Amino acid sequence: MAMAKITDVKGREILDSRGNPTIEVTVTLDDFTSACAGVPSGASLGACEAVELRDGDPHRYGGAGVLNAVSHINGDLAEAVIGMDAEGQKVLDEKMIALDGTENKSRLGANAILGVSLAVCRAAAKSLRKPLYTHIGTLLSVKKKKGNSFPVPMFNILNGGKHSDSGLSVQEFKIIPSGILGFTKQLQAGSEIFHTLQKLLNQAGFATGVGDEGGFAPRVESHAQALELIIRAITDAGYRPGQEVCIGLDVAANSFYEENTNQYLLKPENVSLSRESLINVYREWIQKYFVVSIEDGLHEEDWPGWTLMREKLQKEASASGKPLMFIGDDLLVTNVKRLTKAIAEQSCNAILIKLNQIGTVTETIACMELAKKHKMHRIVSHRSGETVDDFIADFAFGTGAEFIKSGSLSRGERITKYNRLLQIFESDK
Image 1 (cartoon, helix red, strand yellow):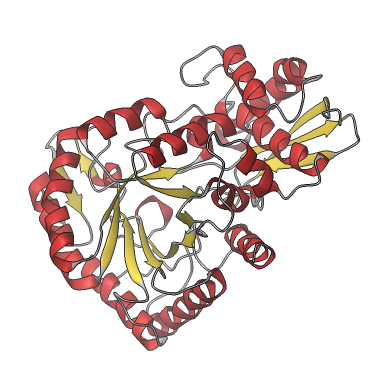
Image 2 (cartoon, rainbow, N blue to C red):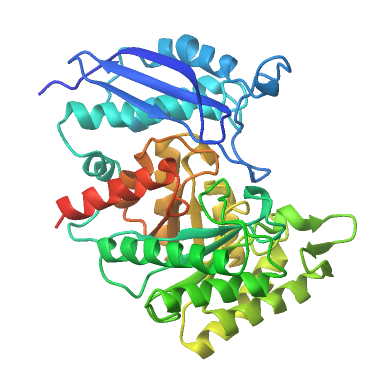
């Protein structure tokens, strides 16, 4: 059977879940298959992420427009990929990377390149009449075995940091139903705990509006109070904390690190902490609140600190018998070079995977495969500025990721990923 070739590529400016401009790309093949992809956008960015091209025109969307990136899609990128085989994802992605010619995709924009990469991947799957996750599985160097584990969801039910105005320094408080079997039951647990937390917050007189990722953003007195409320919500919803449901934190330490003093300013407690003191705070949370994962626990260039944190807290985890995940997000930015350094320095044992941090499907897969080779956990993640595109659900399952995080149990752009996972879970039985 002849491979379908790309005949048309169209980019356009759309709005993301925060009402800011982002990119959507439609790709058409010569067998009349057509597929569309939306590109997400982050608020809490690692300094080494691939460049999201913005127009900078103060008279349009406060400078956040993406018309230049769209013009690259409809110009240089379209010209480069039209006529190529849609199934040749690696060749296509490498051609776009070479065309851009920069280390961080700053010429054409990682948002422009990723839009084309995602849309071609989806179009190829449609043309082959395969589920997207099956097609993604064929792009791996080592093919995924049938019956592989299904990604466990990490639900961000309470928002802080740059994702809300709760006043909390820690960006995400997540519940992880890893002690519950089956995605359907895990999703049910997440929803029930989320709604139980809403009732508890109401009863305590807290606001129950949600942040960027769909979690609640109450102005609580301390991080300890936030964690206690979540533990109570887990229990009141009928689940066992530490056994069926644990807690994960995305600390996003970059956002409250003060370079001039080399301290971390933790709010609302208003305490200034050294690296060692902050690690001790994590130790206390691990002991008291069934915390099993810490993402970006220190700032992104403190390589010795990451190694120290892992050494100190790993002992804690060994004593409790619970494995602890040290997740690199801003530290690693889905980048093979930074991941290679982290492996050498034993900085972390888990990686957050965001397609738009690196800019192509091929490079993302390469990063995941390197992490897997070194027995690191892989967590596929959304961004705080999302679209209703559910690509990452298929991507997480297709690549064999152990976890996925797509925000809370509210807001359509979050739920669409979880609902797609439900479909995949039911169809893959």
